[in-house]
Length: 242
Image 1 (tube, rainbow, N blue to C red):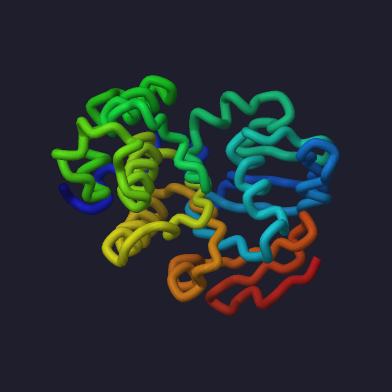
Image 2: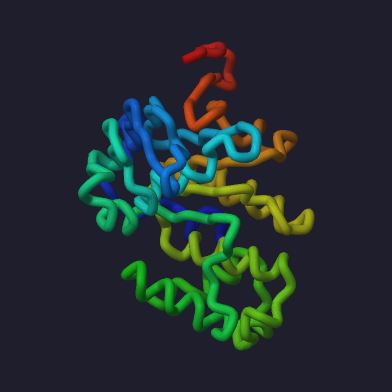
């Protein structure tokens, strides 16, 4: 399968370089009563690859979940693709792909059944499932194996294949290299590069700076539920403290 043939974004007039894909202004979001995000300001344009850094509990995962339409903003302005995250989260979810710490796979279903389920849920043709598994190096002999019998690395590859299959316009990757062997990590790097080259936007939270700093064109630092620094990797923007 040619590299990049199956990882580009779905066609959209919003996926044009320079167009603002994520726009957050003074956004507060709660987990229970706890402010997981405490006034986030962030703009991200189409085609950018952005690395989100910060200590555990800083709000990195909450930021990704907010952009995925899974966490409701309590206050502030929050838009993805120009859609209000307070009122149009379901429309946003159809256009993004989130890889979280949890693989979101069903243990009792086979690998292929899992992808067919997510294809139906995402309104994607089921024919995209097998090519996505091939892209992630998931052997055909594993397609009929229930997920509970897979190794952690195999499960992670299947979860990434579910994202690839959707061809999202916005990729949200939470520790995407976690649990993968060297070849799997290299595959993740290729997917990020190919997705961005095809016009998708990628936001990834990671502690593996040896890999992700080379992939990202920009680094955003989160602490205490706020963006505290924003650095352009090329050196053109320096560090901007908020």
